[in-house]
Length: 234
Image (cartoon, rainbow, N blue to C red; front, side, top):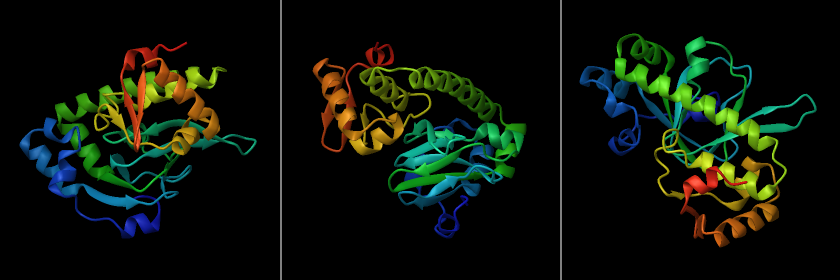
């Protein structure tokens, strides 16, 4: 399935519970939903596993059932530039699959994750015949454009607290990542990878955001108390 041979070897049919966590599936007509359900596969990605690699051709459209992924690229000086994190419920790579072009980014698991894949042939079949699927893909592309514009803005911010706040808001996007809800299971180290700051600096920012009543740090993750305030933090 994914670009790693180990991930490919781990592929299996999804369980009914896993299918229930795929946000676009129940929007389809019965025949299209059956087609997609029969074609979908899932695999467990271990920390560090690549789901997509720069230069590799796509074979699946991917989504996160459980876990946390990082989308990034490599700069000319060899530094890794993170575009975004991908939380539960998030699907990605539709633009690459539509254009049938090689990946221009890497997607890597930050922790043990369950990743779903829809074969590219089935993706295009649904794109050609399913209005509901087309509507979901258009909404994804539109939301992702806003996501990457916001990511560019975050990259230019020098205030670490604002960088953390805006990055957290992106991970709680209810359209892109409907599986997150109000509680995001993430460690401070994982967040530091996504934000591009040290774990210690991320910890300081989280404490300040908690003091402002925007989030609550809980065992195993973070709970958002005021999403709009996180999005507009300055």
